[in-house]
Amino acid sequence: MNAGNEPVGENGALLNNTQDRITLTVKSFATFREIMDPQIRMDFLKGATVRTLLTELTGRYEGLAELMFAAPGTLRDFVNILKNGRNVHFLAGLDTPLDDGDVIALFPPVAGG
Image (cartoon, rainbow, N blue to C red):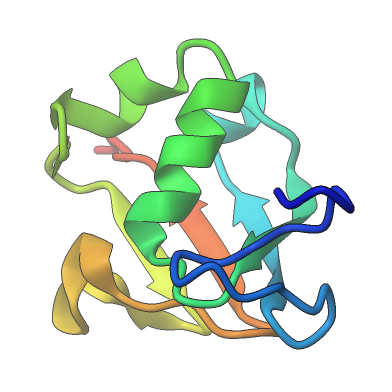
């Protein structure tokens, strides 16, 4: 922040709240819904990634990290994260960039038989 309490980017430039931010929708399913809201809208600075999103979510919702991660930075087997219907595993994984208007769907492992 600067003296005017306006956000600044990494390079020190003032951030325009509308041009330098993105808004996305996060939807949770199955057991993730027991811990977090079924659907939320979140704002991030441009340049945010799926990793940024998950860091924010796991800090906000107690118990989510344990369900989502086997170890720090390593998703549990069969946890699926979709960006606009595409599994991030087939994109850039946790480093998949987020864009304004994205819909992120979080699916925990599901057992069945």
